Length: 153
Image 1: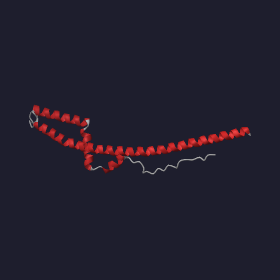
Image 2: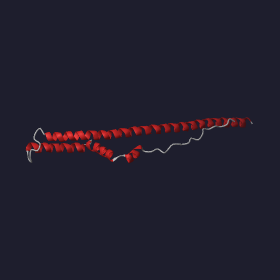
Image 3: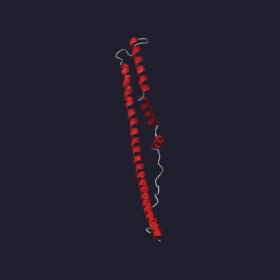
Image 4: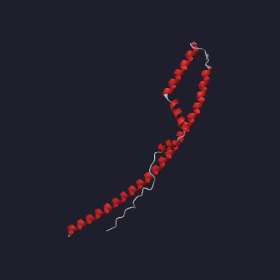
């Protein structure tokens, strides 16, 4: 009888898988939180609609002079406020996007490491299945041989 051989037992020698987002959320600074909040707020329909209503009101009040012409046509003061808003909003949004890109790179690297571990474990499972198939074939041959000997005896 041919001795049955099996691969070594696979040892799971790696730290537990962690959620990168949870780790990064614990490390976020107040400035990064503020940048994310601004990017979320400015990039919403609520902000666009609110800003549009304010601008419409601004134009109506200045054209009709219900209160006072604080910014007569061509609305230079409104243009200044819009330019200031754009000048401060764009860099804050870029900070948020840069942080998100760094998070995406870290998450991608973490996925790569997990995929490598999974591939290693799958290889171990396939090696064990292959050894079991070989062992079953050997056992089947031995049983067939024993049945044949029993018939001939």
